[in-house]
Image (cartoon, rainbow, N blue to C red; front, side, top):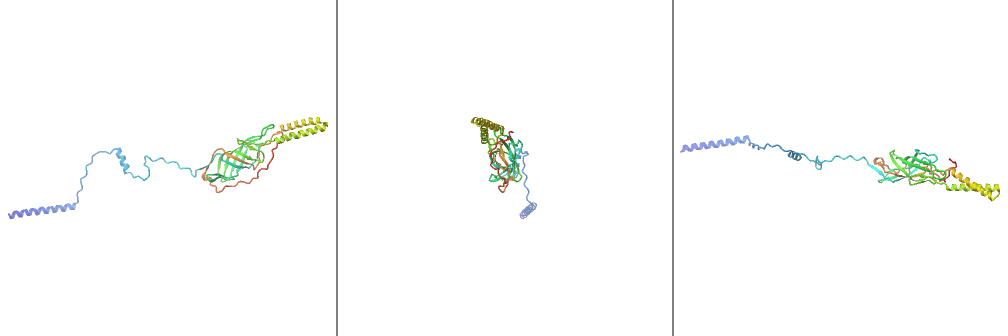
Length: 294
């Protein structure tokens, strides 16, 4: 009995010692990794690829996605433009004299601005800017009726900084020192000389009457002489032309812009109103009929 107990105790001791040995070797080897899970062998669809790429792609806050990004818009022009509207009045002074006596279509016309033009709260056309154009029509006055006519067209404006702009303007008013006026079409019309015509007839009639009376020493002779003098006066009026349409140097002309002017904003940065040349205005003059019958 005692020997059985000794054999059982020896076997238990061996089992205990074997368990300690196995535990020590397991601690030295480390924990065993878990077995990998078996995945089904299926290929991802295109929709899954798209959603996966959109989910994993980094997004910049506030930036549109590549599919919805708009095309870049063109950059605006530097400085922009300033518009001088159609119908703007510009006062000018004339640098070269013009007359229907000698002017012909194509002759140049030179003028200068007298007053600054404002737009958007700033000076865009300073006083002293140059304007050029040409004569488009020159019509001399008739011998029996009709007045002299001048038509001019303004085409170019040069600002004090040499910035050149295309222009389309026609006169609306003129101060020539005489009786010239501007009609609705922008044509400068000369004055008539009715007082001079009447004076010529009266003078020749009186002179004819005087000569007739002296020659015949009778009233009948005076009447005949008056008739002859009146006829001579009428002939003188018919053979001579009416007053020429004239714009002497220094005449003031107000023009109206027929279409808008667009100015580059960065080229009209003027610090002041400018200054026009000092030109003496033309003297006042009375209309006179041309005494030479041609």
